[in-house]
Length: 357
Ligand SMILES: *[C@@H]1O[C@H](CO)[C@@H](O)[C@H](O)[C@H]1NC(C)=O
Ligand SMILES: *[C@@H]1O[C@H](CO)[C@@H](O)[C@H](O)[C@H]1NC(C)=O
Ligand SMILES: *[C@@H]1O[C@H](CO)[C@@H](O)[C@H](O)[C@H]1NC(C)=O
Image (tube, rainbow, N blue to C red; front, top):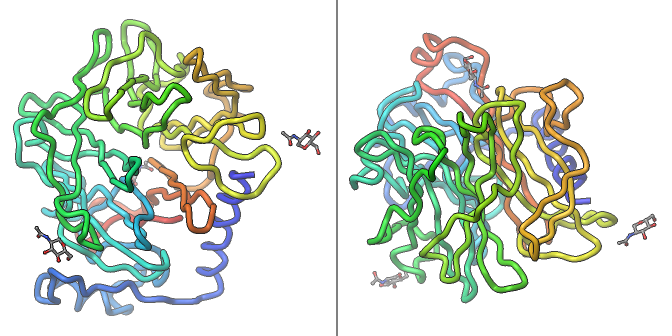
Protein backbone atom coordinates (compact mmCIF):
# COMPACT_ATOMS: atom_id res chain seq x y z
CA UNK A 1 0.00 0.00 0.00
CA UNK A 2 1.06 3.55 -0.59
CA UNK A 3 0.82 4.22 3.12
CA UNK A 4 3.21 1.37 3.81
CA UNK A 5 5.61 2.94 1.37
CA UNK A 6 5.26 6.20 3.24
CA UNK A 7 5.85 4.41 6.52
CA UNK A 8 8.81 2.63 4.99
CA UNK A 9 10.44 5.89 4.00
CA UNK A 10 9.71 7.41 7.39
CA UNK A 11 11.33 4.45 9.15
CA UNK A 12 14.18 4.41 6.65
CA UNK A 13 14.99 8.04 7.41
CA UNK A 14 14.82 7.42 11.15
CA UNK A 15 17.06 4.36 10.86
CA UNK A 16 19.63 6.31 8.92
CA UNK A 17 19.59 8.97 11.58
CA UNK A 18 19.85 6.42 14.38
CA UNK A 19 22.72 4.62 12.72
CA UNK A 20 24.60 7.88 12.71
CA UNK A 21 25.06 8.16 8.99
CA UNK A 22 25.81 11.81 8.63
CA UNK A 23 25.49 13.37 5.23
CA UNK A 24 26.14 17.05 4.97
CA UNK A 25 23.68 19.31 3.27
CA UNK A 26 25.13 20.99 0.21
CA UNK A 27 25.28 24.72 0.61
CA UNK A 28 26.76 25.92 -2.63
CA UNK A 29 24.02 26.98 -5.00
CA UNK A 30 24.47 28.69 -8.31
CA UNK A 31 23.43 32.00 -6.78
CA UNK A 32 24.83 31.91 -3.26
CA UNK A 33 28.34 32.12 -2.01
CA UNK A 34 29.30 31.28 1.56
CA UNK A 35 29.44 35.00 2.33
CA UNK A 36 25.66 35.07 1.95
CA UNK A 37 25.40 32.79 4.97
CA UNK A 38 27.67 34.16 7.68
CA UNK A 39 25.92 31.87 10.18
CA UNK A 40 27.43 28.84 8.44
CA UNK A 41 30.58 29.12 10.47
CA UNK A 42 28.48 28.72 13.57
CA UNK A 43 26.12 26.11 12.21
CA UNK A 44 29.03 23.98 11.05
CA UNK A 45 30.42 23.77 14.55
CA UNK A 46 28.91 20.87 16.42
CA UNK A 47 30.18 22.26 19.73
CA UNK A 48 28.10 25.37 19.39
CA UNK A 49 25.23 23.73 17.50
CA UNK A 50 24.64 20.33 19.09
CA UNK A 51 21.04 20.18 17.85
CA UNK A 52 21.61 20.61 14.14
CA UNK A 53 20.94 17.32 12.42
CA UNK A 54 23.52 15.79 10.14
CA UNK A 55 21.01 13.97 7.97
CA UNK A 56 17.64 15.69 7.85
CA UNK A 57 16.89 18.68 5.66
CA UNK A 58 17.56 22.02 7.32
CA UNK A 59 17.97 25.50 5.96
CA UNK A 60 21.38 27.07 6.61
CA UNK A 61 19.76 29.43 9.12
CA UNK A 62 16.47 31.07 10.23
CA UNK A 63 12.93 29.87 10.75
CA UNK A 64 11.26 27.29 8.51
CA UNK A 65 7.85 25.65 8.63
CA UNK A 66 5.60 23.85 6.11
CA UNK A 67 7.10 21.95 3.14
CA UNK A 68 5.66 23.37 -0.09
CA UNK A 69 5.28 22.13 -3.66
CA UNK A 70 7.56 19.06 -3.48
CA UNK A 71 7.99 17.45 -6.88
CA UNK A 72 10.27 15.43 -9.09
CA UNK A 73 10.84 17.17 -12.41
CA UNK A 74 13.26 16.19 -15.18
CA UNK A 75 15.47 14.20 -12.81
CA UNK A 76 15.58 16.82 -10.05
CA UNK A 77 13.78 16.70 -6.69
CA UNK A 78 12.45 20.11 -5.69
CA UNK A 79 11.60 21.10 -2.16
CA UNK A 80 10.13 24.52 -1.48
CA UNK A 81 9.29 25.49 2.07
CA UNK A 82 8.01 28.26 4.28
CA UNK A 83 10.95 30.39 5.35
CA UNK A 84 11.41 33.66 7.22
CA UNK A 85 14.37 35.53 5.67
CA UNK A 86 14.31 37.98 8.59
CA UNK A 87 15.01 35.70 11.53
CA UNK A 88 14.68 32.49 13.51
CA UNK A 89 11.03 33.01 14.45
CA UNK A 90 7.84 32.94 12.39
CA UNK A 91 7.05 36.38 11.00
CA UNK A 92 5.52 38.60 8.35
CA UNK A 93 6.99 38.43 4.87
CA UNK A 94 7.30 34.64 4.63
CA UNK A 95 8.81 33.39 1.37
CA UNK A 96 9.03 30.12 -0.57
CA UNK A 97 12.62 29.01 -0.11
CA UNK A 98 13.77 26.57 -2.78
CA UNK A 99 16.19 23.65 -2.65
CA UNK A 100 16.98 20.92 -5.15
CA UNK A 101 18.48 17.47 -4.93
CA UNK A 102 19.30 14.51 -7.14
CA UNK A 103 18.93 11.96 -4.35
CA UNK A 104 16.74 13.52 -1.60
CA UNK A 105 19.81 13.44 0.67
CA UNK A 106 22.22 16.08 -0.61
CA UNK A 107 20.62 19.47 -1.22
CA UNK A 108 21.52 22.65 -3.04
CA UNK A 109 19.89 25.81 -1.71
CA UNK A 110 18.77 28.19 -4.44
CA UNK A 111 17.32 31.71 -4.49
CA UNK A 112 13.83 32.04 -3.06
CA UNK A 113 11.21 31.01 -5.60
CA UNK A 114 8.38 33.24 -4.35
CA UNK A 115 8.52 36.31 -2.15
CA UNK A 116 6.01 39.06 -1.36
CA UNK A 117 5.92 41.56 -4.21
CA UNK A 118 2.31 42.10 -5.29
CA UNK A 119 -0.89 43.36 -3.61
CA UNK A 120 -2.20 39.76 -3.58
CA UNK A 121 0.80 38.40 -1.62
CA UNK A 122 2.48 41.50 -0.20
CA UNK A 123 2.24 40.29 3.41
CA UNK A 124 3.52 36.74 2.78
CA UNK A 125 3.69 33.86 0.35
CA UNK A 126 2.21 31.01 2.37
CA UNK A 127 1.89 27.30 1.66
CA UNK A 128 0.83 25.55 -1.51
CA UNK A 129 1.57 22.74 -3.91
CA UNK A 130 2.97 21.93 -7.32
CA UNK A 131 1.14 20.13 -10.11
CA UNK A 132 2.82 18.91 -13.29
CA UNK A 133 0.47 19.58 -16.22
CA UNK A 134 0.38 17.54 -19.45
CA UNK A 135 3.31 18.55 -21.63
CA UNK A 136 5.56 18.33 -18.55
CA UNK A 137 4.75 21.84 -17.30
CA UNK A 138 4.91 22.45 -13.54
CA UNK A 139 2.60 24.99 -11.93
CA UNK A 140 2.55 26.25 -8.35
CA UNK A 141 -0.62 27.16 -6.47
CA UNK A 142 0.06 29.08 -3.24
CA UNK A 143 -1.65 31.20 -0.63
CA UNK A 144 -0.95 34.91 -0.63
CA UNK A 145 -1.57 37.15 2.36
CA UNK A 146 -2.85 40.22 0.55
CA UNK A 147 -2.69 43.92 1.39
CA UNK A 148 -5.82 43.56 3.58
CA UNK A 149 -4.35 40.47 5.35
CA UNK A 150 -6.91 38.38 3.51
CA UNK A 151 -5.93 34.87 2.33
CA UNK A 152 -6.19 34.35 -1.42
CA UNK A 153 -4.88 31.65 -3.79
CA UNK A 154 -2.35 32.50 -6.48
CA UNK A 155 -0.61 30.76 -9.35
CA UNK A 156 2.99 30.83 -10.60
CA UNK A 157 4.85 29.11 -13.43
CA UNK A 158 8.56 28.62 -14.19
CA UNK A 159 10.17 31.50 -16.07
CA UNK A 160 12.23 29.18 -18.24
CA UNK A 161 11.25 25.54 -18.65
CA UNK A 162 14.69 24.80 -20.11
CA UNK A 163 16.39 25.88 -16.88
CA UNK A 164 17.17 22.46 -15.36
CA UNK A 165 16.68 23.77 -11.78
CA UNK A 166 13.61 25.97 -12.43
CA UNK A 167 15.21 28.76 -10.43
CA UNK A 168 12.87 31.58 -11.37
CA UNK A 169 9.08 31.66 -11.11
CA UNK A 170 6.61 34.10 -12.63
CA UNK A 171 3.36 35.04 -10.94
CA UNK A 172 0.21 34.82 -13.08
CA UNK A 173 -1.02 38.22 -14.30
CA UNK A 174 -4.60 37.42 -13.24
CA UNK A 175 -3.82 36.54 -9.60
CA UNK A 176 -5.56 36.00 -7.28
CA UNK A 177 -7.31 33.01 -8.81
CA UNK A 178 -9.45 32.24 -5.74
CA UNK A 179 -10.74 34.53 -3.00
CA UNK A 180 -12.43 33.47 0.25
CA UNK A 181 -15.91 32.16 -0.62
CA UNK A 182 -19.11 33.17 1.13
CA UNK A 183 -19.25 31.69 4.63
CA UNK A 184 -15.48 31.11 4.93
CA UNK A 185 -13.38 33.45 7.07
CA UNK A 186 -10.85 35.50 5.05
CA UNK A 187 -8.12 34.39 7.48
CA UNK A 188 -9.11 30.71 7.23
CA UNK A 189 -8.71 29.98 3.53
CA UNK A 190 -5.35 28.53 2.57
CA UNK A 191 -2.95 25.76 1.48
CA UNK A 192 -4.10 24.52 -1.95
CA UNK A 193 -3.26 20.86 -2.70
CA UNK A 194 -1.66 19.32 -5.74
CA UNK A 195 -4.45 19.21 -8.34
CA UNK A 196 -5.80 16.07 -9.99
CA UNK A 197 -7.71 15.51 -13.20
CA UNK A 198 -11.05 13.69 -13.23
CA UNK A 199 -12.27 11.32 -15.98
CA UNK A 200 -14.15 14.30 -17.46
CA UNK A 201 -10.80 16.05 -18.01
CA UNK A 202 -11.53 18.79 -15.48
CA UNK A 203 -8.94 19.72 -12.88
CA UNK A 204 -9.79 19.60 -9.20
CA UNK A 205 -8.00 21.04 -6.21
CA UNK A 206 -8.94 21.44 -2.57
CA UNK A 207 -8.12 24.38 -0.32
CA UNK A 208 -8.16 24.19 3.49
CA UNK A 209 -10.81 26.28 5.17
CA UNK A 210 -13.07 26.90 8.11
CA UNK A 211 -16.59 28.26 8.44
CA UNK A 212 -17.85 29.75 11.71
CA UNK A 213 -21.32 29.80 10.18
CA UNK A 214 -21.35 26.01 9.79
CA UNK A 215 -18.79 25.40 12.54
CA UNK A 216 -16.78 23.16 10.21
CA UNK A 217 -13.22 22.63 9.07
CA UNK A 218 -13.23 21.71 5.40
CA UNK A 219 -11.46 20.78 2.18
CA UNK A 220 -13.07 23.28 -0.21
CA UNK A 221 -13.31 21.88 -3.74
CA UNK A 222 -12.57 23.87 -6.90
CA UNK A 223 -12.84 22.95 -10.59
CA UNK A 224 -10.99 24.22 -13.64
CA UNK A 225 -10.93 23.38 -17.33
CA UNK A 226 -7.69 25.24 -18.14
CA UNK A 227 -6.01 25.19 -14.69
CA UNK A 228 -5.89 29.02 -14.64
CA UNK A 229 -9.55 29.85 -13.99
CA UNK A 230 -11.24 28.13 -11.07
CA UNK A 231 -14.83 27.76 -9.87
CA UNK A 232 -15.85 26.65 -6.40
CA UNK A 233 -17.98 23.51 -6.29
CA UNK A 234 -21.16 23.78 -4.21
CA UNK A 235 -20.01 21.37 -1.46
CA UNK A 236 -16.63 20.78 0.14
CA UNK A 237 -15.03 17.46 -0.80
CA UNK A 238 -15.04 16.63 2.89
CA UNK A 239 -15.59 18.54 6.11
CA UNK A 240 -16.00 17.87 9.80
CA UNK A 241 -17.33 19.60 12.85
CA UNK A 242 -14.84 18.34 15.37
CA UNK A 243 -11.93 20.66 14.86
CA UNK A 244 -11.27 24.17 13.67
CA UNK A 245 -9.38 25.22 10.57
CA UNK A 246 -8.01 22.45 8.36
CA UNK A 247 -4.49 23.37 7.39
CA UNK A 248 -2.52 21.81 4.57
CA UNK A 249 -5.05 19.28 3.27
CA UNK A 250 -3.60 16.50 1.10
CA UNK A 251 -5.70 14.17 -1.09
CA UNK A 252 -4.26 11.27 -3.05
CA UNK A 253 -4.81 7.61 -4.05
CA UNK A 254 -3.04 4.58 -2.57
CA UNK A 255 -3.13 0.98 -3.84
CA UNK A 256 -5.27 -1.39 -1.82
CA UNK A 257 -3.01 -4.36 -2.51
CA UNK A 258 0.25 -2.95 -3.78
CA UNK A 259 3.25 -1.22 -2.26
CA UNK A 260 3.95 1.22 -5.09
CA UNK A 261 2.77 4.79 -4.98
CA UNK A 262 -0.08 5.95 -7.23
CA UNK A 263 -0.09 9.04 -9.42
CA UNK A 264 -2.41 11.72 -8.09
CA UNK A 265 -5.05 11.52 -10.86
CA UNK A 266 -5.18 7.70 -11.03
CA UNK A 267 -8.47 6.01 -10.18
CA UNK A 268 -9.87 2.49 -10.31
CA UNK A 269 -11.06 -0.44 -8.18
CA UNK A 270 -7.56 -1.08 -6.83
CA UNK A 271 -7.15 2.31 -5.11
CA UNK A 272 -8.54 4.11 -2.11
CA UNK A 273 -8.00 7.75 -1.31
CA UNK A 274 -6.33 9.37 1.66
CA UNK A 275 -7.64 12.69 2.92
CA UNK A 276 -5.20 14.32 5.32
CA UNK A 277 -5.73 17.51 7.31
CA UNK A 278 -3.48 19.27 9.81
CA UNK A 279 -5.06 20.55 13.03
CA UNK A 280 -4.39 20.44 16.76
CA UNK A 281 -0.63 20.28 16.02
CA UNK A 282 -1.01 16.87 14.32
CA UNK A 283 -1.58 15.38 10.87
CA UNK A 284 -4.77 13.29 10.79
CA UNK A 285 -6.13 11.23 7.92
CA UNK A 286 -9.07 9.12 6.82
CA UNK A 287 -9.19 6.50 4.04
CA UNK A 288 -12.14 6.26 1.68
CA UNK A 289 -13.63 5.89 -1.77
CA UNK A 290 -13.51 8.81 -4.15
CA UNK A 291 -16.25 9.06 -6.80
CA UNK A 292 -15.38 11.98 -9.08
CA UNK A 293 -18.57 11.58 -11.15
CA UNK A 294 -20.56 12.49 -8.05
CA UNK A 295 -17.93 14.83 -6.56
CA UNK A 296 -18.01 12.64 -3.48
CA UNK A 297 -15.44 11.30 -1.09
CA UNK A 298 -16.88 8.58 1.18
CA UNK A 299 -14.52 8.01 4.10
CA UNK A 300 -14.55 4.77 6.07
CA UNK A 301 -13.89 6.54 9.37
CA UNK A 302 -14.28 10.16 10.46
CA UNK A 303 -12.32 12.75 12.36
CA UNK A 304 -13.85 12.52 15.83
CA UNK A 305 -11.34 14.59 17.75
CA UNK A 306 -10.58 11.49 19.84
CA UNK A 307 -7.25 9.78 20.35
CA UNK A 308 -8.23 6.89 18.05
CA UNK A 309 -8.30 9.15 14.99
CA UNK A 310 -5.72 7.98 12.46
CA UNK A 311 -2.50 9.97 12.54
CA UNK A 312 0.58 9.90 10.32
CA UNK A 313 2.92 10.22 13.24
CA UNK A 314 2.78 10.38 17.02
CA UNK A 315 5.68 12.74 17.53
CA UNK A 316 6.19 16.20 16.13
CA UNK A 317 5.22 16.11 12.46
CA UNK A 318 2.95 18.71 10.91
CA UNK A 319 1.73 20.42 7.74
CA UNK A 320 2.87 17.48 5.63
CA UNK A 321 2.53 17.07 1.91
CA UNK A 322 3.08 14.16 -0.47
CA UNK A 323 4.18 13.95 -4.08
CA UNK A 324 4.35 11.11 -6.60
CA UNK A 325 7.87 10.19 -7.75
CA UNK A 326 7.16 8.75 -11.20
CA UNK A 327 10.70 7.46 -11.71
CA UNK A 328 10.55 5.13 -8.71
CA UNK A 329 6.75 4.74 -8.63
CA UNK A 330 6.58 5.82 -5.03
CA UNK A 331 4.76 8.52 -3.12
CA UNK A 332 6.99 10.51 -0.81
CA UNK A 333 5.77 12.31 2.28
CA UNK A 334 7.44 15.47 3.58
CA UNK A 335 6.55 17.03 6.93
CA UNK A 336 7.72 19.87 9.14
CA UNK A 337 9.29 18.94 12.48
CA UNK A 338 9.33 21.62 15.14
CA UNK A 339 11.78 21.38 18.04
CA UNK A 340 10.48 21.56 21.60
CA UNK A 341 12.83 24.30 22.68
CA UNK A 342 11.82 27.90 23.36
CA UNK A 343 11.69 30.89 21.03
CA UNK A 344 14.62 32.29 23.00
CA UNK A 345 16.59 29.14 22.18
CA UNK A 346 15.65 29.48 18.51
CA UNK A 347 16.93 33.04 18.38
CA UNK A 348 20.13 32.00 20.14
CA UNK A 349 20.81 29.05 17.85
CA UNK A 350 19.75 31.10 14.81
CA UNK A 351 17.36 28.58 13.31
CA UNK A 352 14.19 26.62 13.92
CA UNK A 353 12.65 23.61 12.22
CA UNK A 354 13.55 20.83 9.85
CA UNK A 355 11.88 18.90 7.06
CA UNK A 356 11.68 15.12 7.21
CA UNK A 357 10.57 12.63 4.59
C1 LIG B 1 16.64 29.11 -20.48
O1 LIG B 1 17.53 28.19 -19.86
C2 LIG B 1 18.45 27.62 -20.76
C3 LIG B 1 19.22 26.55 -20.01
O2 LIG B 1 19.82 27.07 -18.84
C4 LIG B 1 19.35 28.71 -21.33
O3 LIG B 1 20.24 28.14 -22.26
C5 LIG B 1 18.48 29.76 -22.02
O4 LIG B 1 19.29 30.82 -22.42
C6 LIG B 1 17.42 30.27 -21.07
N1 LIG B 1 16.52 31.14 -21.79
C7 LIG B 1 16.27 32.37 -21.36
C8 LIG B 1 15.29 33.14 -22.20
O5 LIG B 1 16.79 32.86 -20.38
C1 LIG C 1 -6.92 -7.29 -2.69
O1 LIG C 1 -6.53 -8.41 -1.91
C2 LIG C 1 -7.62 -9.07 -1.27
C3 LIG C 1 -7.05 -10.13 -0.35
O2 LIG C 1 -6.04 -10.87 -1.00
C4 LIG C 1 -8.54 -9.65 -2.36
O3 LIG C 1 -9.65 -10.30 -1.74
C5 LIG C 1 -9.03 -8.53 -3.23
O4 LIG C 1 -9.79 -9.05 -4.31
C6 LIG C 1 -7.89 -7.70 -3.79
N1 LIG C 1 -8.44 -6.53 -4.44
C7 LIG C 1 -7.99 -6.05 -5.58
C8 LIG C 1 -8.70 -4.84 -6.10
O5 LIG C 1 -7.04 -6.51 -6.17
C1 LIG D 1 6.07 24.47 17.38
O1 LIG D 1 6.75 24.73 18.56
C2 LIG D 1 6.18 25.77 19.33
C3 LIG D 1 7.12 25.97 20.53
O2 LIG D 1 7.44 24.75 21.13
C4 LIG D 1 4.77 25.38 19.77
O3 LIG D 1 4.18 26.47 20.45
C5 LIG D 1 3.94 25.03 18.54
O4 LIG D 1 2.70 24.51 18.93
C6 LIG D 1 4.66 24.02 17.69
N1 LIG D 1 3.91 23.78 16.46
C7 LIG D 1 3.65 22.57 16.00
C8 LIG D 1 2.86 22.50 14.76
O5 LIG D 1 4.02 21.55 16.56
